Every structure is written in structure tokens, then in C-alpha cells.
Amino acid sequence: MARPVIAIVGRPNVGKSTIFNWLIGDRLAIVEDKPGITRDRLYGSGEWLDTTFNVIDTGGIEIGEEDTILRSVRVQAELAIEEADVILFMVDGKAGVTADDEEIGQILFKSGKPVVLVVNKIDNLQRQDSIYEFYSLGFGDPIAVSGAHGLGLGDMLEAAAKHFPPEEEEPYGEEVIKVALIGRPNVGKSSLVNAILGEERVIVSDVAGTTRDAIDTPFEKDGQKFVLIDTAGMRKRGKVYETTEKYSVMRAMKAIERADVVLIVINAEEGIIEQDKHIAGYAHEAGRASLFVVNKWDAIEKDDKSMQQFTQKIRDHFLFMPYAPILFVSAKTKQRLNRLMPVVVQAAENHSARVTTHLMNEVVLDAVAINPPPTDKGKRLRINYVTQVAVKPPTFVIFVNNPELMHFSYERYLENKIRGAFSFEGTPVRIITRKKSSGE
Image 1 (tube, helix red, strand yellow):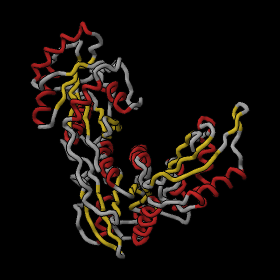
Image 2 (cartoon, rainbow, N blue to C red):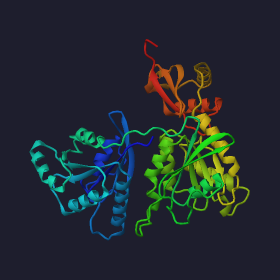
Image 3 (cartoon, rainbow, N blue to C red):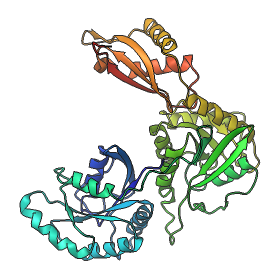
Image 4 (cartoon, rainbow, N blue to C red):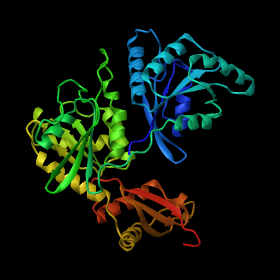
């Protein structure tokens, strides 16, 4: 089910990106001591007390600025607020309460969302007293933290977790294949849903982002039950269109989390841009079965090599997803649309497939015999046995003498051999290397 969402909001240079990096355990955000360095919303996931949550880092809100970039950042922050279950309102303990803090506080009050007030840069006990002036913002007890030193962050997360929504029950049975359509605004996701269903169930417009929210559409085809999850594009806010492709990412992530199979929709007319790779990367990291759907194929001039050339472009841009099938379709003319759902069904079956330990060990040991692991400083990796531990995606544990000797290139070789022996087209395969204990 969809994870809780935390948005980190505040004026520029209060340390939002440092806290974001700590929450996700990564260095995705650029951290620089310069106001306004975080231009885009960034997304990641973290864990707290067995609960996985999504977190959004926003650009700093600058009040009253008419600069195009700053106005765009403010719109993104407002969208992040709208998407969040709980907001971390970050302020600077060294600077004290500013007029911008007060105005941002008013924006947050109007949102009606739960707010945890976080006073950053409280690096020592002497500064502790400075947090009391922040009571004037009206958000209750401020939580003192130091992003730079990792102080108080557990208290901050504990306060945020109190506002996480309760887990919802899965509304669909195991037999239902949940299919999410993701992609930049205006690639034709809603048109594809309509074409698959054969009726105008979803509003379609040439304006990017006319889909307001994720829409579930159950249907049945050839005895198989499906749910199509169409993800939202941008909500129109004033005239800020210059960064529209960034606005749909969080809703796409929510849809991916609920899906069994993800259709990554690409606009044949526009080709592939960087944002397509980001969106596809979320599906891959989430371990979902995936396929590329190149829509609007009817609208471009083609010759007998066009499909092959576009296929190669996809393979070159999405090196991390060689397993994903590619279909060229037209929602408008329904060209090749009849091939789509059979590929979806096959990907879903491969995503939940199980392989017996006996068969898997035969394949892996044959692969090792053909191409033994290379030595590293005189030591050689020894593979003892392999077993499948999970599905969705298929996940295998390889027990070895020393996991540090498993080079990523040899792991990729083994994955390719596994894929060659078993049909895992359309699904990622995860391999975990563990040391064989004496009791095993």
C-alpha cells in the first residue's frame, strides 16, 4: 500500500537538504551553504520503527519574490505540502524567527496538514534556549535538532510518525493484476487507459496534467481481472509550466508502490528525456515488473529501421532495465494495442514465479563450471548453494564462502544465466550474497 509522505518545508538555507539526506541515508540532495541551491523537489524513502515512508525535499520558499525560478520553487513546495501526510517545518535556530518563517507558517496553517516544527542548527546545549522564541509560530513544542551532527533527529521522526495515516487494507484480491501507467505529463497515459478499456472513462485533453489524481479502473479481459491505475499529471497553478515534468513524480511513486506491473509510457514524438529515466528508475528500485510503452507511434514519420532505432535508444538510456519488454502502440488508432495485456499478464506471472532450489542450483553450478569466479588477491569465491527467498520480484540468496569476493560483474553474469534458464522477462531479479554459516 501507499507509504506515508513527509514533506520538508522552510525558507532557503535552513538545512532542509541535510535533514533529507539523513532521512534517506543518501547524498541525493546537493548541500551547499548558499540560499536556494535546492531547485527541485527531491524524493526518497526512509524507515522508522519498521515503517517505510517517502520524503520530499523542497526548494526554499521565498516570500514575495517574482523571480521565475523562485516562483517555480514556491509552486513545487505548495504541491509537496498538498501531497504530504505530515510536514516538517524547518527553521534556523541561529537566525531566530524571521518574517518569511511567519508567512510560511501561514501557508502551512491554511493547508490543514499536521506540522512538526523543527529548529535546526542547535549544535550545543548553550543554543537550546534559543528554541523558545519559535513557540510564537503557533505549532506547539519546537524540536531542537542539528542536521550537521545528527542530534535530535530521532525525536523529530517520532513526532512525525504520530501523524502517519493508519495502514489501509488492500482492496483487491491476489488474482487481480494491478497495472500502473507512469510517465511525464502529456505522454498519453489517459488516452491509453481509454483505448485499453474501449470507452471514455478518463478525461483526456491536450493540456499537460489534466488528470487530477490517481484513478483506479477495474476491468476484466479474457477471464483475467485487472485494475488500471492512471497517475496524475500537474495540477495547473497560475502560469508555471516550465517545470511540469517534475510535478507528477510523487503520485507516480504512490502508484508504483501499489502496482504489480508498471507501464512506463514514452511519447514517440518527444523521444526520451532525463525525467523519463528518473520515473523508470523508481519502478526498477521498487522491484516492480515493468514494460516500456512507446505511445503516439502513429504520429511520427517512419521507415523500416525506425522501430529498431528507437528500441536501441531505449536500451541505451535505460541500461538498468534490460529485462523490460518494449511495445510500440498508438492509443489514437489502437495500433498493436491487442498485444499489450498479454505481455502484462506474462510479466506479472514472471514477477511472482518460484523456482525450486534443486533446479536453481543446477543452473548456477553449471554457470560456475563454465566460467569460474575470478580470484581476488589470491582468494577465490566459492558458491555453496542458492535458494529463492521471495517473489515480486524473484529474490535469490547465494550462500558463499566470503560475500566480499562477489564482484558485481560476476553477479550480473549469474543473473544473466538465471534469466537464460527461466523466463523472467519483464521483472527485475534480485540477488543477495550471504556467508554460509557453519550451521548451514
